[in-house]
Image 1 (cartoon, helix red, strand yellow):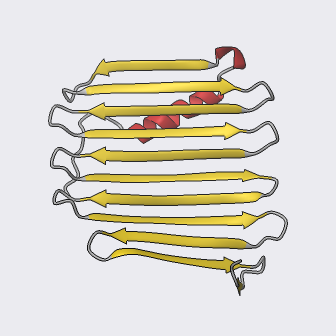
Image 2 (cartoon, rainbow, N blue to C red):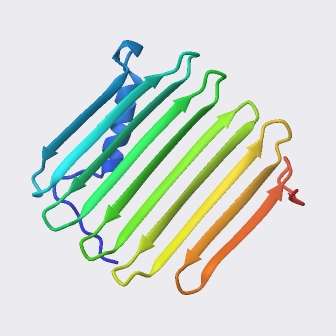
Amino acid sequence: MTTHRLPLLATASATAALALALLGAAAPAEAGAHRVVRPNAAGGTTAATLANRHGPNGGQWQSARGIATDSQGNAVLGGASRFTGPNGGTGQRAGRTQLNADGSASHASGFTASNARGNVQSSGSATRDADGNVNQARSTTATSASTGNSVQSSTSYNSDTGRTRSTTCYNASGAVIACR
């Protein structure tokens, strides 16, 4: 797969992460959404959306998304979001997608979330070459706060060989246990 660089365009995910960090400093009175769309030096368009929401019970959600295109038909998209629930649960997600004029594409994303019951983390990626061949992989781990037990699951897909998946459970000491 050929990776096309978009001149003068930082990856949209980096822009989104920075914007999300800046949103964290926004006061509740500034809650809302902000959008920007403008031409860029690569002959395409750059657009970004920032959102900051507060719930009636103290929860908060923030999001930043961006896209940049060039005159050759390439695009990069990225986004990040995070939340805090009224009972202390937290989570965040970030992702980046590259779309190329030759039909190839790539994507990577991940998320984490936690609350009093435990936590979960997941990350994955996918690619498609110009001929349409696809490769995908994702790994997820969830851990119980009360027992310390965890489950790790990995899934992969290849358009030639199909899907594979493995799941393993562990106790708090790291020993393999039966999954139930």
